Amino acid sequence: MSIQLQYPHIHKIGEFTFTVATDPTATNILTADVFAKYRSLSLSGPSAALVGTITLEGLRSVDDDETADASWVTIQSPPGTDVAIAQDKSIVLSTLPFAALRLASSATETNDRTFTLWGQVAPD
Image (cartoon, rainbow, N blue to C red; front, top):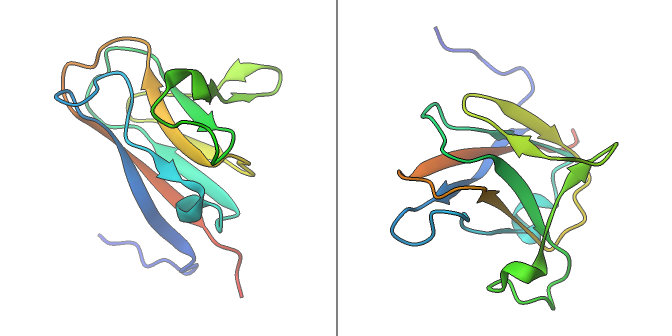
């Protein structure tokens, strides 16, 4: 059965992928021009097992060097808990004042893993 959305303002924005051959501990980057127009985001983990704890990281400014790990900060939610995403789970995010986002793993992922980012735009 296919669900017919009555609210057509939910869009697949992009994907974060741990690519073992390139960098098994950090994903590709999605910039604010991709996700900033959405009022809320949903980040879904893969169905396959993960090796490490996966956390969401933000780049504070477009002037920061996105190739330097020190430029990235782990995003936390009150009361100071790292925003983490697990296998077969989704988290909801809102108001992300960062120039870019990526995911980081606490361990080397042994297979490529893809996380999907969805966004909800405000109705017209």
